[in-house]
Length: 442
Image (cartoon, rainbow, N blue to C red; front, side, top):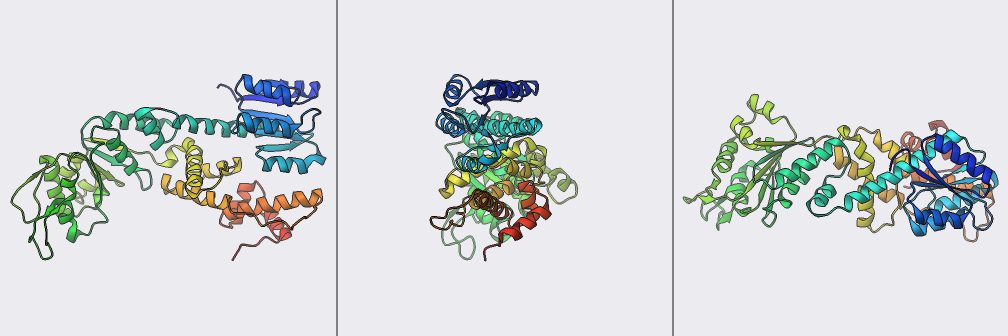
């Protein structure tokens, strides 16, 4: 879909419909109109839209009826309500039932455009996420693993697909948290060795004293405690893939032996006299400049050149900011399903806030944040008093207090972060916190 997006304007007054349609068309939107809920349903059934703008009060089917129609026909389609000052309580209820936003009349036309831009963006992000999940075969598999629309991640996907079918050793380079093991598993799962084992070895986590035995294996009696033969991880992976993670941490004394195993595809267990042939693919990963490490004498240059036959560089998250919101929505949905929570899409303010953060921990940090947010968003609010009959100002105040508490909990009770999420000056937020007596649970 081109332009700023397709908008359906629903209002029973012809002059209002015409005026809104003209302004939105001049602003770059494709616009259709309807004079009520029935006409809106016909329009929605006939063509796709990115967002619906509807008046709340209309005879013969009001904005709530339009909201219900959208929920039935296309639940992900955002709805923006236009309401008079006296209808704020109804608008609050509509927000609870899934409306994207509401504006009080008379509204500022530029403000409406800004709200619609955010809604269209959220709609298209959801559609892109759906598209990534709707592919087929290997392309679907790689798009589900390496999610994003940026040029950097698209190029990486193509390289992984190309290399998966070629039985060549690969060096994966990327910062902590960028997904090096995900790339390695994709190379294995989408290639001819997928029926074999994927054996991951973290070179930084295996103690040097047992490294050689773990990797190459040993025969019975090779050393004290070797009560039986042990197949090493390299031989165990026969027919599959060996993933050497954090290869830069491999003990220097063992680098020569690993180089020989990679070059000759042979391994000799400790204490044994018989060499075992290796039918494996090696994928190594590093978070450092391995060439610079080898030039500085901290890593064997011959091992580096043997590993780097093909090098795959994973971009850090800061180099693919267009993917941040899409990844966040995916991780949030994954967390909700894993924790057994109902689906609650992030707000436009949430997405705007996460897109500007530096994310030094890359995708891993973003995923952890999404999981924390999923739990915070579904924390039950404090129940209202039984049979409470609140006035409209009290109802609005209760809703405002709830929103502020949710933002504070999602921000770990950082008032600076919560103020940014809510779009409020920090001083105003502090005043409201004091007014509503909001306190962090002990």
